[in-house]
Image 1: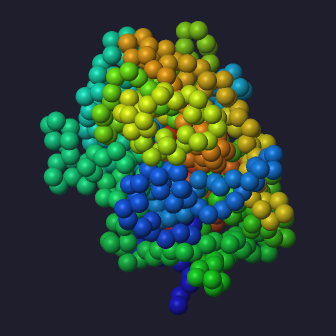
Image 2: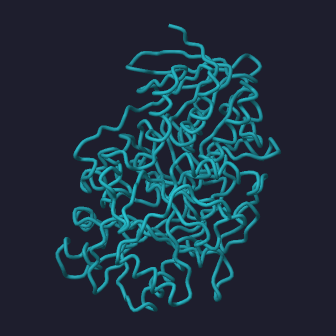
Image 3: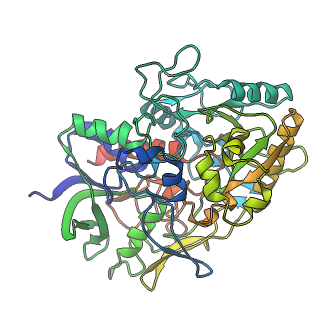
Length: 520
């Protein structure tokens, strides 16, 4: 068996899959290593209890928090990576997100590149992942070309919410979604649409492959069309080897099916997700890299960010029979309000609450004392559900690392007041439109310490920059210290903004792929 390739890509999530599909037409031999298998398509895909309460598809691992507590990280090791269960909200960072921004909790640093440097790749990323939206509705969206697909239409209750918000001077907009949906005039899916607009979209694996995830949009089409691309599943990259100088990766040590294997390539791209990519580099210790591969700056694994996030259930007097709820967002408070001169963040809708989720969450913490006195099924019918996120600021002490053979994740909130003020804005906003609600923060009651175990939106552990002393990667996302090693997940982010990071991951991967075309 020939184990040498022109390019090895480690990880099949959005960063690895997008790069691989862009380079497949070059004809170069490409190997994609994925530690997991294909996520099983089964009835449990649409079980709120299986997905959220039992954690059926989460990695069976135990990590250690700063205070010594153990927890299960909500990582998903499958072809397509975490995108198999993401909500497919595909935003561009705002232009100002690329600049230095002052927050109450500290300063969000400027990127070494501007929005203009990413703009054409954002266009390509939106096309690749079938993004539906309406350009011009979001006052902070920097895009100029129309979205590739028309916006996902609101259902009646969400449309009423949009109208009421616009009536008090706010600017609700259609959430940009990566989705394989053909709509009829009434907004429902056509008989031939892959997506059927069900309530099991956001946070669930899609049983119909209607979600535009990395497996569906990149991996499967590439394998079908290009025999120069090989995918190995169940292939855990243990470590990267280098030559004696430490300047070139010479091999990837892999464990597959309980057996040790070794693969080589002219160029290696790491795209395991910000946490797992950092851990791979930290495992790859050698005489030339005693602190971990490409870690001369000491920053590998540091500056971990994942947004200050909250899942808020607004329980109202009126019922909400919306099925596909994730279609609306609001950025009016993104960079501040008239009474607080610091950024707050983004409000977007998320999946409809299911009774099993609420029932599973209720026994934990103090949720029971906050719940209205009604059955769980009725409680779900009276709620609208929102995902709130404020910017998490880079802090070198927020980091992932190994100690005594175990993975440690140290996280201290950096911008918590912004998130609390955003919750208050949501409550006031609903009251102002005549929909007063009891707000229940589901993220506090899941019994699994969501602020820590929740690893959605992970970023920042191998930041890029021009100075090797203060960054891990150069502006091409190549390791400063290793000539043939690149990283194309969200590890490279110097800051994270307050929008979902996946579209920026995809855009950057396409940008790096174009750079690699010349190298390959």
